[in-house]
Image (cartoon, rainbow, N blue to C red; front, side):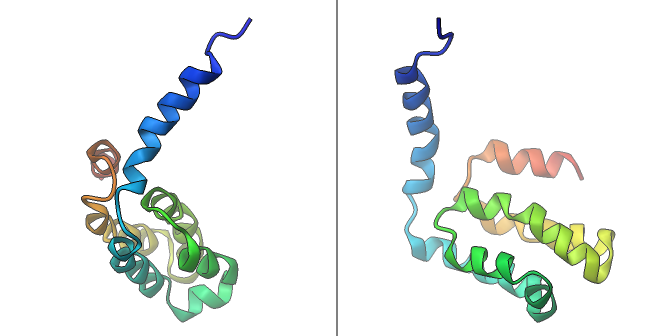
Length: 110
């Protein structure tokens, strides 16, 4: 017996996922460009797959979760402290694109 019915699980996913579909691709471009700038040519050379992902990710949630991979790449180049600070500076660009709870969780760790 299933504890969570498939219909219920799908409806919850639809509710949570609808936020990403509200925004046009143009709304993501400033965030995407800021992330690519932060990655820089050295980071793109170190991890070309990440650069490709950043270029083609289609929603704010996907870009948000790519930040951890950016920290890993930037840590190799500049050290962990500078990498974390660089990625944290990207967070204000996500306002209005993500639920406030996601942004608040990031700020609470500071």
